[in-house]
Image (cartoon, rainbow, N blue to C red; front, side, top):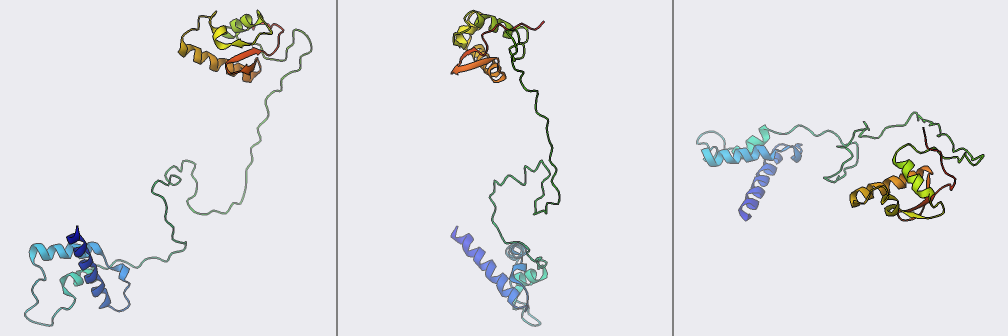
Length: 207
């Protein structure tokens, strides 16, 4: 590890020395990859190891010459402050809504107005409870069981037993169904998994 660190620092030193020989050159334009490839050539092929026997002495050397020959282009000016983003930043990758990645001026706002659902009717008589009639099937059987004792608070297990719902998995599904009917106003939830008829008046099953 220490050998790698020493080699890295030596390459960086050669890069800085080479750039300093060319006045006005930004040190950031020196490519570490180019310098590393030149170092490999020097090791494997002995390129630039021995000084030239004729002509002026190259003070930059083979590695420095390669760095100066392969300078990176000038960096463009930065318009925004430099920020560090998290590696798991998800908003750019999960951009399924086509959101812009830059600041955008809002020029218009479109609002969608949804019509409310039909209000629950007010009971006008013993046969008009104001609740939707239950669909034929299990809901009709449940209502018939609960109307046998209208004022009683029924537990889900007690309702499901006459219907043959005794399996725990099926009973859990039945509890979810009862909770849904409670949200629809057919039942009143008095305790966990315990329900009472929202109206003691018998409901007329749907035809």
